[in-house]
Amino acid sequence: MDYKESWINVDFNREVKADIYCDISKKMPFKNNYFDEVLMDNVLEHIKRDRLLFFLDNLYRICKNGAKIRIYVPHFTSTAAFKHLTHYNFFGVTSFGIMEAKNKSGINVSGERYNKARFNVLKERLMVLSQKSDNFGFMNKFASIFDWFFNLGGLRGKLFWEKFNIFGFEEIYFELEVVK
Image (cartoon, rainbow, N blue to C red):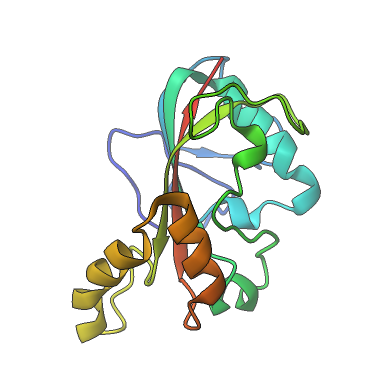
């Protein structure tokens, strides 16, 4: 995996270069309101399903109000989502809707609540290829055009293509803002 200079790199796998090794599905070793920004690149799918909401509450705890959380995960239509033996979760458009503090119209949401964490979903982007993909040669050049097209039309457009694109999507990108 990529080691990011000037970031705090966290991993469970000691075969990977990191600054801190820990099981993030348990309590993370950081103070409350510590981070302004978090990047999770293909992390959430590896957290067991019964620990995911606990992890998101813990992530919420260690982030400051207004912190940005950037997430790359396999889309549920990707074969990679199911082929990897350690993938427990699959993601799509509106996956973080149950934790939104406000809906797309700016109205406070007071629907189903399963955990404490509250986020505003700033971006959801369907991606035909993984952001790190380099195995498809000429297709990489066209991927950004396809991504642009499939993300037109706001939420309804994304939901439409998520359902009717027969080729599927490799990844989905989320950008969340912590609301405390």
